[in-house]
Length: 352
Image (tube, rainbow, N blue to C red; front, side, top):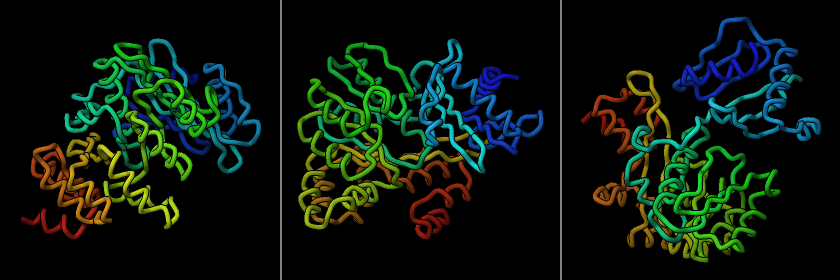
């Protein structure tokens, strides 16, 4: 069995990831669970052979790998799909994890992405943040939002991704996509360059550090609509994370800036339903006047209450979304408790 057969099998099995790790059988991740294939464990030489095939198919140079670095890239196989690959070393041998990205753009209705999330794409300027742990579908949510803009607005969309996952065709918008390390050396130079490229919408793959967060805030202040991601679990935690990268003497000014430019924060995670399938759960915060005041006055602990009372505007807390799924019979009590933000409060709410 060669690597293309392994990838084809993963697509047919609706897997999200393929693991090629010495000492284990080839493993698919399906609905968040591992499924190890028959055929025995992979030996180091077999793992290397599969990784060599990946580089051959993708026509990718092994420059990073030969320098002793990890390698992260994406490629497409005709009539099969796109694949995002990370090649790395572990226990002195090579390993790879392959993420499957099917051709075409995701359908938000089929995926269960609510209109309250998608409507954030209707903003013309400001900052929209999609947050959550790795592998929770942030890129997919962003792809749905960018696709909506592409189909509805005459504008220039610039994306900066590491690596590019979804491919957009020019529709009403012009879409230019830049891959980190191939089209540009990094997020920061790409973002600075974008401001000279007549942008209307900017997708910054990740706000990783002080420099990119500071540049993103500055870019959003220029009048573009900027989307980005953070690895945070709640709206309050997201704002705190941004503030914490700045020195104490700058934080008050940054609070004023965030209150002014932030349009919304969407936190998401994937949890197993009662049938074992992965379902998305969202916390949605939209920036109302009350939210702006809470950010300025450092009253982030009050954001949950504002989201609960803002249900008519599409807002909800993560715990509220989990509770709703539980009451609908879609997830178990244990899943709700494991996935919630405020454990003690959730125990009480589940007992009512």
